[in-house]
Image: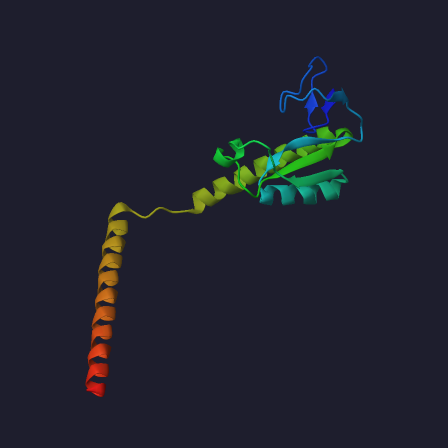
Length: 158
């Protein structure tokens, strides 16, 4: 495998330019090189870091950054996203761990969705109507209270 010194990713041996950043600064990957595993949100990155520490995997977590303005318009990219780099020698173990973590997070999300119980339509409509009536009542009381306070202050000074 070839290592791109610019974006720190692995490329096929037959490639002349990095498919990610189009750099031609490729060299043979060494076991100690840190390569890009993937991009992750802050929560997932911290969970992976805990797992990497337990397994003794050498890693580095860096803020996701790109030099292009495309990042500003990419709805998939959050400002808190992180790039996760692991040593070439630990890449296979890190990928397996990452896949397991992704599956765990998906199961947890499915469980949360199952626990959420949607209100029946009629009950939801009733709650919305009552909320609206209470809102109007609150506004009316605030206006009447302010008007009464204004009248009282005027009578006090006149």
